[in-house]
Each structure stands twice: as C-alpha cells, then as structure tokens.
Image 1 (cartoon, rainbow, N blue to C red):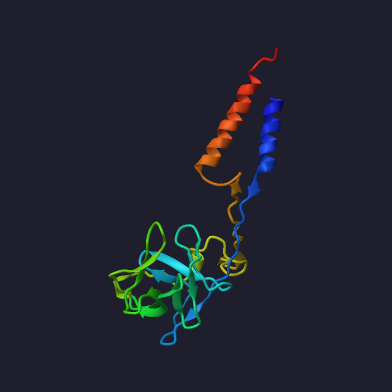
Image 2 (image 1 turned 90 degrees about the horizontal axis):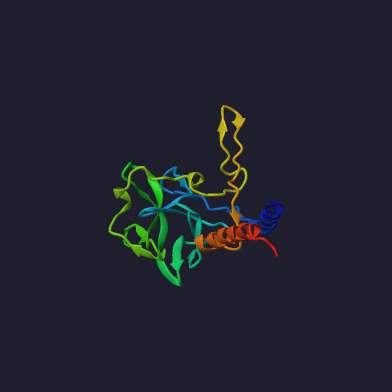
Length: 193
C-alpha cells in the first residue's frame, strides 16, 4: 500500500494546474441606437474582440483565439492578411440592433466547424431572433469585476473550475497515465526472490 501512495504522490507532483487566462474584450456602441454589445455574432457562433491584441476569440463553447484574425480601427476583420468582412450593428429579427461579423455585401459570416476559417453564409441578421449582446454568459474566465453577479445586494463569488493538465492533454495522455498506474499496482503483487 505504501508503494501505491508513493506513486500517487509522485503523480500529483507531476501535475500542473491548467491556467485560465483572464482576457478583456472590447465593448461596441451603436451610433444609430442605444445598443451597446460586446458579443460579435456570426452564423452559429459568438465571438469577442480581444482588447490587447484585437484578435477575435470564439466564446461559444471553449474559448478559442482565432490567431489568424485582426480587427482594425475601422472594424474591418483581417483573416490571414485579407479583408474578411467587418464588425457592425444590424437589425435582427426581434427589431434590435445587435453586433455582427458580416461580409461586405451584408451576409453574416460563418466559421467552418473544423478549421474555423470564415466564409460567407446565405443568411442575414434579420434571420436571427434572440440574439445575445452580453459576452459574460459565454466567456469562460472573464476578468474580476467585469461579470460579477449580485442577488439582492449579496455578492456572488464566481470561482473558476479547477482543471489539471497531466503531461499534456487528450485521451492518449490520460490512458498512458492510467496504464502506468495499473502497471505499478501489478508490480506490487509480484514476489521478489
């Protein structure tokens, strides 16, 4: 039993907490209405523009920075050095002006499910109802004080989930560690001459 505890202890020392970097994102104000949004809507996805790098970050699902993107001062999205539409407000199906990544001819941009490359869809903002405008419901780890909730004056503390990354990620690493642990348990039952 002592050997098992030593192995478990060594495995715990080899673990490192996975860092969840806190990111700040831009807030956009519409010049034609009172709309203020930080979610950039695409066909089937929500994104934000990172304040520090002006890159787009996919926030629907796991936060993923689209490293080949850049949003310039005119809100034009640059993808791999080429203009790929712009960030602008448009009327949705509910009659609200919400923020969109659109092609230059008014169609909503869509992201490829595997490569995350943008392409022009065949839908317009008016085809979407219930469009989000607040990134706090999507961003995995917002900066402290940005998305704090309160209920009747009581402050709710949002503690981010604790994740452990052991020697890499994925099923292969976890399977390797599990097999190693089982091997050490098997060594315990072998008699020495």
